[in-house]
Every structure is written in C-alpha cells, then in structure tokens.
Image (cartoon, rainbow, N blue to C red; front, side):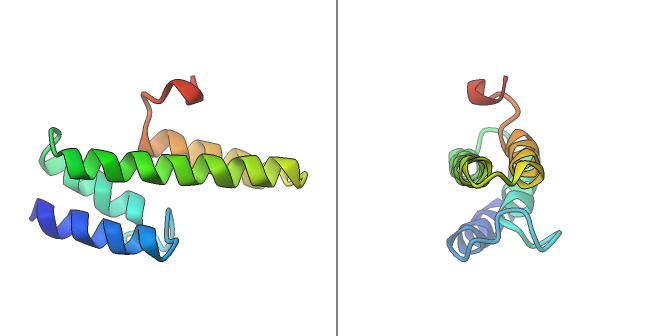
Length: 88
C-alpha cells in the first residue's frame, strides 16, 4: 500500500538512490504513492526532498562545469515536483 511505498521511498532517499535504479529509486516509490493517494503528505514531502537533493546536485554539477549532469538533475527534479517555482 501507500505506507509501504513511502517507507521504501524513505529508504531509497536515505541511501541516495534518488532516480536510479529505475523502479526502485526514491522518486519511483514516492510517485507511485502519490498516484495511489494524491493527498498523502508523506509521499509529497518525500518528492519535495528528492527535488531538493536533485537541485543541490544540479548546483554542484554546474559549479564543477558538468553541464549535462546539471541539466539531467534539473529534469529529474521537475519529475519529482513539476509545480516547484524554482523550476519554472
């Protein structure tokens, strides 16, 4: 159920599996939880945490001149939180 998906997302987030491996990453678990229960606060908070981490990664990559990596992280953050004003 939703609680199991959120718990799996929390574990994936804690180990740094933000978007990979496909199907068992934090973003995958949280997005599935939100699909089942769009009002689930824990899943939405998890997606926000994923987006925050990805934007930090993007900033670090940009600072280091790794533009493709930065762009990829920003795109993934947009999947986590398409309504995030930082991504508009």
